[in-house]
Length: 403
Image (cartoon, rainbow, N blue to C red; front, side, top):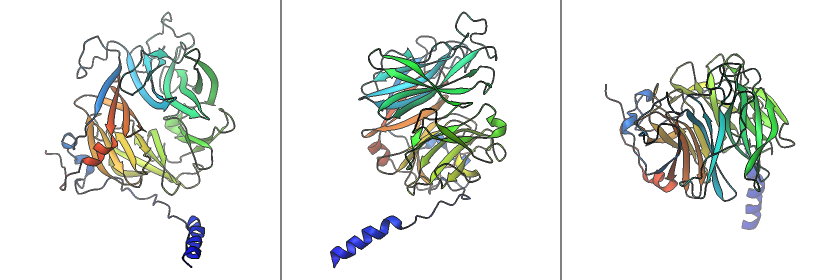
């Protein structure tokens, strides 16, 4: 009888529907430590977590301190992305003349066995067309020159691809905008252009696989400030086989920028957007049909400095989010955790006392590896053990900033 009952339960359970998230809910940050106005959190007093730190690349004058930012010298290092592939870590970033994204900018990479000791950087992308050091437009902002922008690593069918966008270097973005893939030749230790992944596109993070077997990533067309943000789905049959689906409201309800997304425990999708309109909060939207349609973006109570953020789901099912939560200031960089991917209950101080942004977080082994930029001129990595994150408790009273 017990065996029959067990079989019955196993037969019925997979067909039990899980309630979809409430797309109208603004609740994204909760806990006794959160003041009524979450923008009033004392971010400098947040609990701290142990970490290891390394600077991978630094374009500033030799010997300058990480506390010192001289944006007139050295160039730019930003748009940092990590991946673990073929038993080693890989990191890529935008490297160019001047801050930021000017004519002649290229994409570099480095590798590491442990994520802390890195190889000498090398280029992934070639010199942008007619935009090298000998160009009269090199290092300027003009539509007469081109730039590459780092867009992340894509592990597809056991192969490592590097993504980079190419467009005119006047504003964000030029009309010839296109997302390219580069293929790594292990024998030569070099990269070659594998072609355009999708025209008129810059993604924010590399594709992630859906339950359907398709891939999905965000898309901003060159006119996204008026047309809004999209998500593209495909990439399984061919590198350039995608369909684009808009998120309505991302250009009218907010000025959506640099979205990130993850798969919820019920297989619905949640997407987050920074708001360039300056609300100081993250916006959130949901999809219940694998990215084809999205709910209207809703302003959450999660504070934000109008900065890039990076989240991921851990192997144990929890979620982490790395961001700049202090409104109007990219300092500090924090790590927040959630059990369900909807509400975050812990926020820990990672690094600060200076301009820190452009994070990308991955999980490898028992640790989180977080790449970020210092003043847009250094590529840096933090290693944080998941056990050390769990060992830190949040205060039991509101952590409110004093006037």
